[in-house]
Length: 118
Length: 118
Image (cartoon, rainbow over all chains, first blue to last red):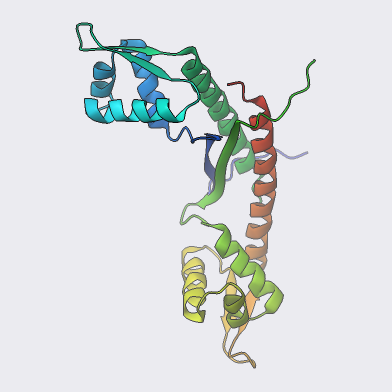
């Protein structure tokens, strides 16, 4: 039995994502955008915090909704910020799945880095 | 206890690599080139099988050798094919580490796809 030490010279790196029949939920950015919409209840405020234009954020959400089997964010006109944005239960499930995957992947990366024997 | 089935609608995908202080062993292509050099003993033959020009293969190997702490392939002048190429033990360790990592990652991807609950 020997202690496994992190080999500082070589590390395992990588990335993971969820792919659906229709599209990939690409990128941490879209997940963050949805999370900010959930907290702020407004696409405009969420876009502003993400340093995106409203138009860019709207297009991102619209594209995700259209490509997805169920909508991720429901956009409604009206309200003091020019529109209310509601994150669906489906979107919350997707975000949870992403977080669980990322946690598992972080552990995998650490384990594999320890196992490197170069 | 329930049987977990593969959810065909959503799959986990991703990629992993080994990063060193100096450089990333990027891409399956370079690993394949080294493996072919090992089998064929010749950079020219290996390049030909990879559908690369000799020059391109040489530059790849030269760059990897220079960036690496120890050479991966030793190129010697002479021999009937205009040069003998020897894969070092260090390179073999790198290749083995890559194969082990890829095997573990394939298992990880399958497990995570089964766990998806969207």
